[in-house]
Structures are given as C-alpha cells and as structure tokens.
Image (cartoon, rainbow, N blue to C red; front, top):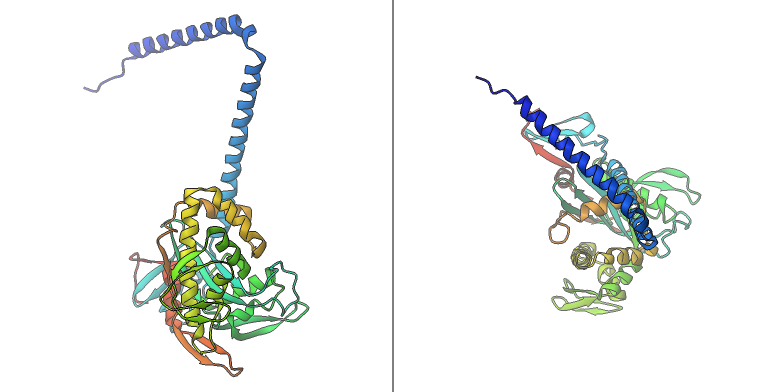
Length: 384
C-alpha cells in the first residue's frame, strides 16, 4: 500500500501558520501605531546611514564580480593558434588545441592565464621614446597561473635567445622580420605598448605560437625602490661579483637599492655569462616574491603599498578587471612557496657581430610548452 499525504493535517498546519502570521502582522501594526511617534531623529539618521552603507557594499561587491568576470573572460579565453613543427609532434587537431606525440594525447588547458614579464634596462618607462632608443629587455619570463590547480609556473627565457623579431623604422613603420636576440625586440618600439607587444609576439613565436594574453614591463629602478621598502632580500650569493659593489660567492648578503640591481644585472664578458645572471635573477625573484607575499598575507594593505611603489616604474596592458581577477585568484594559489620554475636548454655560440646567441633546443621548448599549456589525457589516445 502506498502512503498518501494527509491533506487534513496539511490544511490544519497551513491554517495555523496563517493565524500566526496574521497575529504577528496585527501586533506589528499595533506596535508601529504606539511607537511611531517615539522614534527619535538620531535613530532615523542611523538607520539611513546603515541602509546607505549596505547599498554601497552591495554595489562594490557587484562591481567586483563584474570586473572579475571581465578579467576572466579576457585572460582565460583561448584560440587555437599553435604551430608545432612536424618533426616535433605526430599530429595536431583544431589548430593545436589537441596534439599527439609518441602515442600520447594532450589537450589545451583552458584554465591557464599567461603573461610575459620584462625587466627593462632603461628608465622613464612611459612609451615616449623614439623607436630604437627604448633600451632592451634584460630579463624575460613567461608567468603562467593555472586557475583550476591554483598553481604558478615560471619559464625564464634567455635574453640572447635567437628568435624572429619584427623590425620597425624610427618612425614606427614595420620594415621586416629578422632572426635576432629576443632582448632586441623591446628596442624596436617606443618603450611602451609597441615595445612590450613586440617582445610578447616574439616569445609567442618561440613557444610555437601559444596564445599569451598580456605583458608587464618594469624598469630596474622599481626593484631598487621595492627592496628598499621591504628592508631588502637576504640570500646566499651564487657568484663573486666586483664592480659598483663587492659580492663574494657563498656569503650571505642583504640586497636592496642599487645593490639589488647590481646583483641581478651584472655579468662578465664570458660567452655563457648570461646563464649565471639568469640563475641569480631566478634566485632573487623567488626570494622577493616570498617576502612580499608573506607581508601581504600578514597585512593586506601592503598589496596597495607595493603597487604604488612599482607603478611609476611599470608598464602593462593589464586592465582593472584583469588585475581584479588575477588578485582574487592569487589569494588562493600556492604562490608563496610552490612556484615551479622551468627551463629551456640549448646551445650558446658567438654570433657574427661578436654577441652571444642562444639557440633553443626545439624538443626542450616543446616540453616546456606542454608542461605549461597542456594536460595529458587518456581519452582517445592514438599513435597517429
């Protein structure tokens, strides 16, 4: 026998609920009549202020959600535009959204937010310089945030990496594309948007056309100001350096101000000197990120403080909505202690103009690209 609902009990319960509701309503009306005249002006003002406060908070929260969504839509949207050499992979589908190698299938990870970070050797980074006089990008890294895994990967790229670079005249007209050191891509611009976009384009070419959304450039003076603000970075020197400062290998050193710039910029004239400098830059940036992150977690207002310190020395295409999204994601990442650094191997040789040239190994580049932008899947694996 199937149990049937007791309609009588439901009706009684409903009637009782209505009676209670009516009584509450009547009592409320009577209370309002009795006490309406007793509500004093200060209380009314307080209630109005509270209501306005709640409206403002709601509006701000709504604005935050709108900005966050806009940032997410722009930074995480992916277009399949990768172009892998046929001797690197076995097959490719949907313009690189799916690739196959050695019988393994890899699918584009659409949760990746990536941008190029550039450390620039010029001052006054405001996009007003004549093409060719903007300086060079001494330090270049691809930074990738996985918004699903809540993790960060950093791929330092040698400034001496040989890659196709768009060449522009002093008046800003494109005159062609040549194989040059990656650092020179920045010089073919005005020190602002055109320089940064040229570097981003060349990095994308190096990484087989992967979609890189944004860029952030900072002149070295910003490092000086930020390290002064946080009391310096303590680390063990990786090399002995002599010049404006004297730093001894394996000794503990506190780096701030000009000494911090010296440590990450100085290099000898040896063919492979830039490799040592990249190791120092990686060590320094890792320590800087951890210290700043720790300070922000202990006092969130430090985020605004550091932003204001770096703002005069930075140039980026990240909008308010982009920054809102990235900030909200970074708060829940393993950013402080679990940044994973990757690298690209290759060979360094002396070019015809007596400058070091780093030629990246194609398989090493492929492995880095897959590690950052793709996820292996067992769905439909094939040995195409």
